[in-house]
Image 1: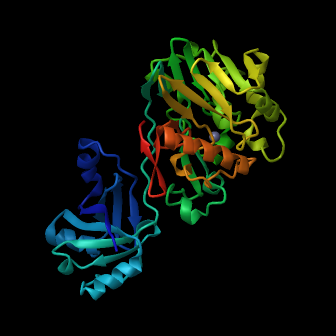
Image 2 (image 1 turned 180 degrees about the vertical axis):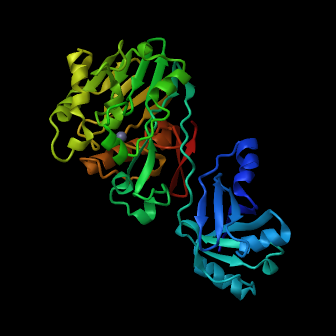
Length: 423
Ligand SMILES: [Zn+2]
């Protein structure tokens, strides 16, 4: 048995007042309050890597935490250690003479937990929590961040948050596995970002994908839990760029969460959102988008594409290759027949905007493929190749839909893949 410190819990008399210190003064991110009725506490999690802080407010003075606060005042309440197999851990502790406080039970987020009495742990209550149970995920991070990349400046933008069905996001992977990586809401949806990439160079400004923009109606916004309280206009402003200053737009594919923001409603008419830009689109993708079938119709909003065509700003192309020096596209297929990723190469360094081939860091394992993909085996082939290259050659990968990580390096250690966050 090998245990790892998971979190430290602090009992407080008023959790909202405690936020003045932990959130406002320290600047820590704090998750929304959750009441755990079984323990009689209100919990506020302060996620961290690898160790979180948990603030516990008793809901009633008669609860264990209530009695603790009454007897000792606010303070350190327990340490939580993660163990792989709780039954093994408990058996071993009992064999060593440790005294448990109650038996194994189900705690917050459905995790199996057990408590070791302070008398057996030198004065501190110790919680054991079984590994693999879901943990609260870090809150979404929508900062505009930039990195110099040889002759380019890469600026990760965003167009707000969207919620998609967790099952659809992870395909054949069962929920008991994916919910450890992304915690779904009560409607089984996981929270995703939409992160267009701005590539700045001496040749001008190239925007890769545009987010969803104002393409959805109120009903669709509800279904997809759209949150554009901060969106692409805000992100561009934070980057010091106006929509007029975008010279070219390149689209990985034409699903609405990637191209919706390419046009906008102005005086009741849908017009190109970036008035000076040419829009580069795969010919085959355009054909598929304007001739949808029952399986992909929900993903293509044809009415938001026609205005681009009517304005004469669409540049259709068919071959893989450079769209400008140092920026080239490569067809992956899979997600759609003509889905493409974008390589940005300068001074011996390579960054890849992976589009929907590897939408989040949770998708870096090969079989974790979206159910949206029309040709999942093609996705598997393209992804296997890209990820191995990315690991071997240290490509910086941009994750278009990850709610927290904009870009990072994929690493492999002891056969396990993980992402070292850069942006
Ligand atoms: Zn997408």
